[in-house]
Image (cartoon, rainbow, N blue to C red; front, top):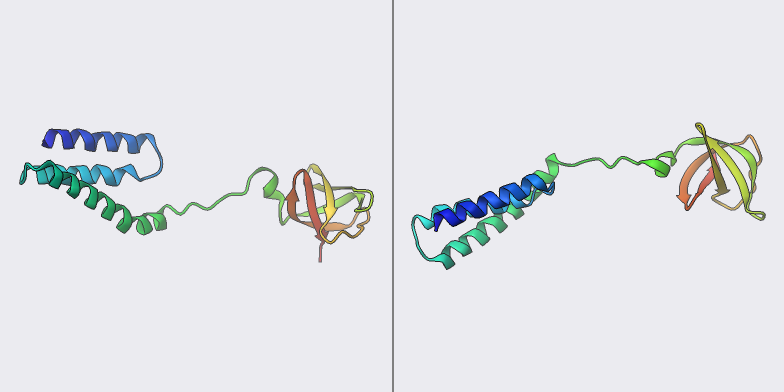
Length: 141
């Protein structure tokens, strides 16, 4: 039976290489431990229980530890990368007419004010959110 546990373990390790979740690794280790247990008992049920218990324990015990070292910071990309940046109003922002544009860097965006107030041209604003294709802005302080 140890050969089958070795094949199962190898399959889990190959699956871990193919995926990026760092989940299958623990099942591969559990299969190796079950393989070791097969040298002491020929009962497949006991070996399977050892596999399940060790895999689950390894997963639960090491998950916080692994999370600590694989904590990836989320990088804002595309449209959401401009939130918090300063911009200049290029066309008056008028909530009644639903018009207004800002320029942030080299990009021009449709804009509306956060508090639905009118903001005149050449006013410096801060981008607080993105809703659809419009930047939501407030006057910079």
